Amino acid sequence: MAKFTKKKDGDLPAVSTASLPDIVFMLLFFFMTVTTMKDSSLMVENTLPNATEVKKLEKKDRVIYIYVGKPTQEYQKVFGSEPKIQLNDKFANVDEVGSFILAERAKKPQELQNVLTTALKVDKNANMGLITDIKQELRKVNALKVNYTTYEGDAFNNLQ
Amino acid sequence: MPRRKAAPEVNAGSMADIAFLLLIFFLVTTTIETDAGLDRMLPPIEPPDTDVVIKQKNIFTVNINKNGQLLVEDNLMELKDLRKAAIAFLENNADGSCTFCKGKKDQSSSDNPTKAIISLKNDRETKYSTYITVQNELVGAYNDLRNREAQRLYNRDFTKMEAEYLNPETPSAIRDELKDKVKRIQDMFPQKLSEAETSTN
Figure (cartoon, each protein chain N blue to C red):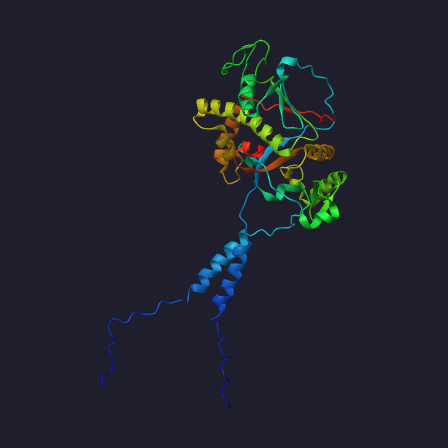
């Protein structure tokens, strides 16, 4: 009996999967860090208009969102089908916009309070009357930087 | 004395499965998106102390009615012609002080780009999509002019320079260099887009 048995030829060694958990963990950490959880669910219809001359909204921590649009199907029984304002998770009237902006501004760190942008996410079927009222409220609390959030696309598609 | 048994090894075979589970959860919930839109500044609520007298010919009035029709300088206009009309107004250069303008020097239109003001008015029943389209065309008019000058001076588009300048990932050395260029182009065609109170009738 030979002391060393010769390996059979043509037998492929198994691929080591020992490092698989490491690879998966690496991916996991990547996605964990880039994930941002949605903080409020939309209660209004929100099909944004298109525009070409857009600028990107960098730095999400400096943005306050205001949603405007028709309430979605499930809320229409209670709130009707006229466009409404949504602040965080609830519907609001125009006169609540000012205090909402002030409250949100107070939550931000001191150094960011002067560079905040208000992003208006308005459904394209809303009327300008409501938007004008919101703009007036924003002027009252000195939140002058606004961003009309849009999709990127040909602006003339809006008119159809 | 009986030898103590070594602690049994934890089976790590299922670690990959657990990690995969978490990975798939985060994969599904991730949304990597940045919002984009039209940046605008609202006018401060307190009126300026001194009344500034602006000549009527330096104001380019755009009215949108509730049906989405445009009244530009008292004439009915199609939306697709607005950008061209705004550009012609901005670089009209009636007093000849603007050296880089290519306007017609029409005496009844704006004096020079720094004096030219676009005034936008809309009805309360105007649709938001129409309003955004008009805003887009007016901002586009400014961007077209600025791009033209940036191409002439620096061989690149103003909008690209500005985007790079505003991008927080741009190294600060490049950003400092861009700052002056961006400022210079902005001063050539300052964006003066005024929005008056909405008409109620």
